[in-house]
Image (cartoon, rainbow, N blue to C red; front, top):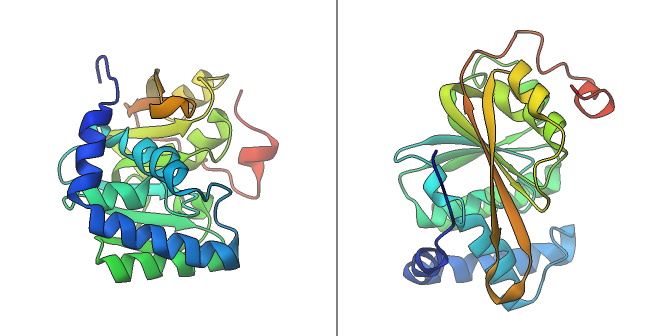
Length: 228
């Protein structure tokens, strides 16, 4: 990727083009949020900007026909808005909490999205030959600091693919972890959400080398002893 900046006019156009499905997603999110506490953002305008438009901000980073993975899917951001807007993308949503997996499966079924849910941990998926280095893109949104997140995500990305992180803060210490795990330079793209709803950052890493077999380490090592 060269210079990149989210095009919110395009994001709004994608949202309006698919308004019916986004409205259905909003209804499901509100219904399940009352039971499962999926998100603290509940206002209609805030959901549209902080969840939907923010998720769509990274849409150009997903190549046509991409097979993508999402780590720590939670309520389905950025994956569900991307799936609604881009029928050419296939997603595997990796989530370890059963109730959230139930919600994600319901959304996928009711909106007829091209995706499946893997109810398990990213570190286990990263060791599984069915998922390891199988994806064009692996993304995550506000899951963990970069060294930890890279160890969850980069083992899932095939060589030549990309790791995309949606962050509230700019790139912190983590470049060494990315390099150890097979990634190239960390590119950070900053942007402001519409209506002054906050500053965000997209981190983009091209996968240049195979991830060494020892990673991800599992048993919580990614969080307790990150690669620094």
